[in-house]
Length: 130
Image (cartoon, rainbow, N blue to C red; front, top):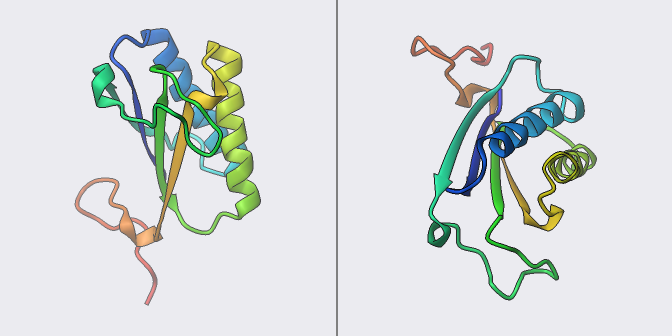
C-alpha cells in the first residue's frame, strides 16, 4: 500500500523516469514485501531551481542537478535491515539501469498506520478490528 512520490528535473528523459518508477516498484515488491500490483506513484518534473539541495554536499555526499528525490509513504513495521536493503536496491538499480549516480538518489520513508489509507469509495479498507 505504498504511495511513492518521485521528483526529477524537467529535462529527465521519459525512459529514465519509467525506469526509476520500475526500480522503485520492484524494490518494494522484492525487498520490502509489498504486494504485487500495489503500484501507486506520483511523478513530478521540476525546473532546476525547484530541486534544492546543498551545493557543498551533505554527510560527505555531493549532488548534481540530476538529483532524484524519492519519498515513500508505507505501513510502519519494517525493520532497519529491510529499510537499508530497500535503499540499496533502489540506488543500485537506478544506477545500473540508467547510469545516474547513486549519490543523486535521495530517499525518504514515511511510516504510517494501516488505517491511514483509503483506496477508494471513501472506505478504510484496512480498518482495525474492534
